[in-house]
Length: 369
Image (cartoon, rainbow, N blue to C red; front, side):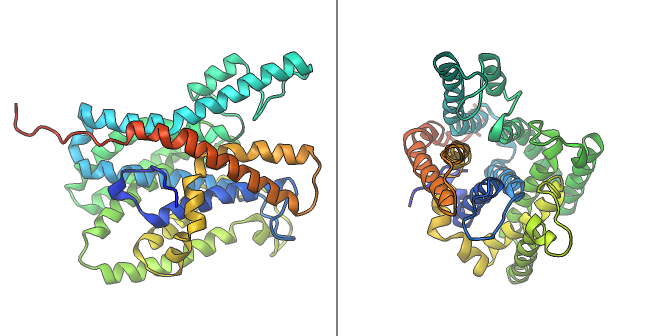
């Protein structure tokens, strides 16, 4: 089994590895279905990709918040912030930069030597475009979500330190604070006004806010004396969440009426976040079918490869399309080739790079010296 540094090791949760792998596969299944490639005959999963991306956002927010909560007020020390930013930078930017360089170089070569302008792999990218992507100002293809998530990293420490302060007034105060934050974000940038593949952070803030709240809630559950009650609640919430997410797929909605467009519910950020939150809490706190499913080795394997798989699968999808390989074999060719590329990307780029930020900082000096 290969492992991926999502958060600090002492906060590692196996079921969330699988949940992250599931999110990556949701995106792959959606994109292949959009191109008429189905992994099971007649199972058209068009339009579910956004659900997977929203789950990515929720997981990242949750997993990054947990260790910061335990640092408390110490998260604003130079040592803690240095550690935080090393982990975030080396987790994302080495592979992301190489991915952008691939687009820049391939665009130049294809234009210069093949006489085909505005074409690149994974997409056309000139130097100004490269700079804009590197600075998170633009997001072609699947890179829009990277721009969104990395911008959130700047806000998270401040959000956590405010949460730590408010938590001293009771858990209900924290809930009220986050409800107010979500309402404010919707007043400033309503979810239904967001653009397709919007690389701005603000429209998606409710997802990240809910992820932070989930981490606070999980910390509360962990220290609660009423674990049996919590387990029963989480059991039912998990199934409600799964049924809700499935019910929101265009395929299922279309079974009960006229066919709806693929993007029919793409802007229901808050509803998706709540439903996935139920699944997340259940997979952590209830030892049942949901946890067993998300701890399957195959899902945890894809959880480790999720970032690379997310980036590289569109390349192989376009190659298979250009080769005009039809039938159900096309899906499996996309998945197999993407998995192989993601594995080598993880081993050669992601894993070595993540080790640069994986060393824990020394504890803060409390001697007053």
